[in-house]
Length: 191
Image 1 (cartoon, one colour):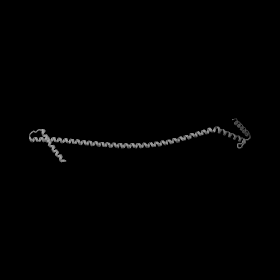
Image 2 (cartoon, helix red, strand yellow):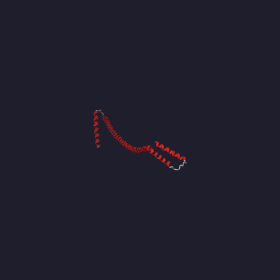
Image 3 (cartoon, rainbow, N blue to C red):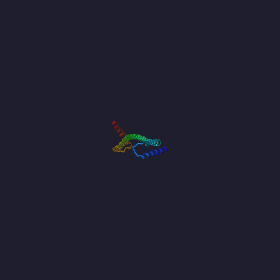
Image 4 (cartoon, rainbow, N blue to C red):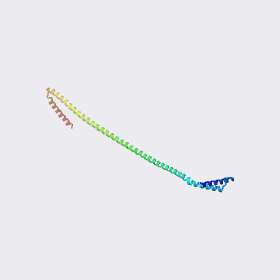
């Protein structure tokens, strides 16, 4: 430090001496130029040793932070692109699954409709069969009722003709057998 102070003092004295003469800015003085060059080199060495490393370290650290931020942004962009692609694939898969569910629901609805139609048809056939059975039963009852009435009428007519009261139970049996034989004859002739 003393050396720098001495050099500066000497340069100052030289400048005062040069100033005492007539100062000329464009005049090169070897004495002043020499000391200016020495001071510049000395300042450059001091700056290179003490100032430049921290400045360059700060610049390198800043450059590293910027590069890290760019790398992170690129990684985030790639992750976002991958997530977007994954989401698109998920949407397509969900759409396909929804279509499959809709298709399955339509098939199930069609199956239920067919089952209901088959069930209704079965019930209809059962009702028709039951109705036919009931109709046949009613027809048989009606025929039996007509036979009984016919027997009663025949007995009444026969009683009138004979003018005597016969045994009603015996008369009914005879007429019923007769009508049964007549009915069998009609059935046999229909075949």
